Length: 250
Image 1: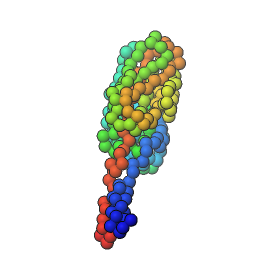
Image 2: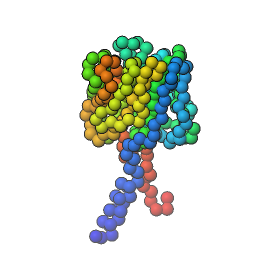
Image 3: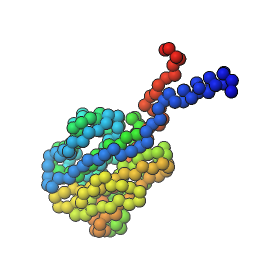
Image 4: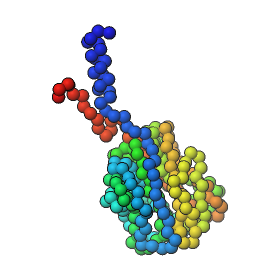
């Protein structure tokens, strides 16, 4: 190999290595809680989070929703708008998220109500997600008692990337619990009862595009259910910026 060709190969290698590869999607941690009885607000325990990560929160509740807040002054956008049980108009479920979130030590999450409510909620920190335009597709579904023990979020439209994380949840107003099905992993699962709005919150990381669905089995087929799913994109290589090629000495 002559000098000119060797130099050209070296320059190509430098150019291609100047932008760092994006880290793969991963769940860093989750935190959640339910309350025993009606409250005006509820706050999770503290965790230490990393700035620029994605935070997705699944919120189940009785009561009137007030904008979700955290101790780092992040502003949360709606992924899945509020859905309401057909048999009890006070039972609700929704999903909110914050991409490129501010993080750090003593990070907690507070669910506020304009009227008192029974919250059950979970927030998940995700690394490797896009820092803008992270939300891709959503679906939500309300089902009555008597449709079978397997409950569904319904199918999303085709996702636009192969690598995405699916964030999902189900709740019920009845004294029941859910079990996630398929490739989903629970990160918070609390049963509902007369004084508690329970919730199962789960995730799956996928590497193929297409329609996505969350299914969970309710303990007994005599209760309504509310289920949802949101899909979030992995960051693409170089999306957060990279070094520029510079000549020696510059």
